[in-house]
Image (cartoon, rainbow, N blue to C red; front, side, top):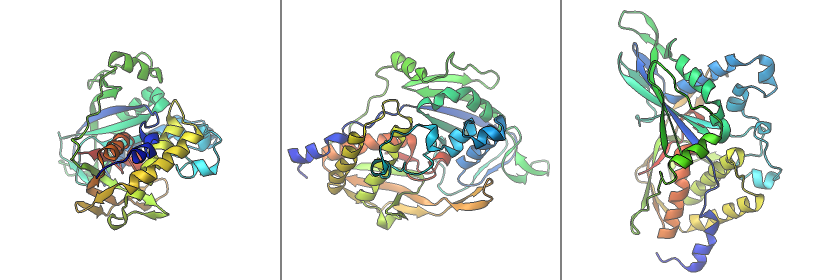
Length: 362
């Protein structure tokens, strides 16, 4: 499929993804009994994180958007100081409402079967990752303390234990590490913590100085298609509807990717793009989508739901799973890859803070 110079110029605004720094903390737990984590399993840790953070602040602080719980779990637009772009700019990137996307993602480090519960026997381990966006890394001490405590009283659903009792299985934190900017730091060895001397956003600069060329993006051979695996149910919403496999088009995928990647950069990026650049990026996604076809034979819908203790009701958690094949001219395919690399960190679609929308370039 030949590409003209005009086609290449039309997607030029997509050459650079708006800057957004992120840090990933890995927590490895060992089950002290039988543990049953209902699907989606990462939501169990997310719920416990909210429980402990809410205990850290007063009700007055929660009500006035000053607490860490409010900033992470409710995230009012006032907490991030959105530029006054206007609804025509903020609407397409999902920021026109009272709340903005959460500045974190909780996910399992390993790929489990989507839509299934996670069950652990005594002595088995599970690793969960907490991805922090931008300056949220400054809350590293409070967040690591919460993750250390949350397994001691048991996690998940009550289940029969080896001794015959029916209770939540305890999980002990056995290790924790931090990765950012190509640098890997051990934080906890099962007995003692060793946090960085400073935990502010300057951590990113220090990591860059240690490993300036640690992450090099590999390119695919010119004739190869781009394969993207939806590891966890991915709930994409386009034109007001949740996208099922039959309705997934390159236009819908481009719009969701634009909304998620640019919206997060506006909220949590250090160098926030100007309104003109945001509009240019949105416009450039149209010719990218037009030059792309999707192979969906290995894509399916996984039905699932989750329970919210705060709202005391269940919510849909099903979404797209499987592998998507993106076919486009080489320059366009490289552009898709560039933007999907960002989605690998921040996820895609709805309910990302609890592990949904996890994607991986195969």
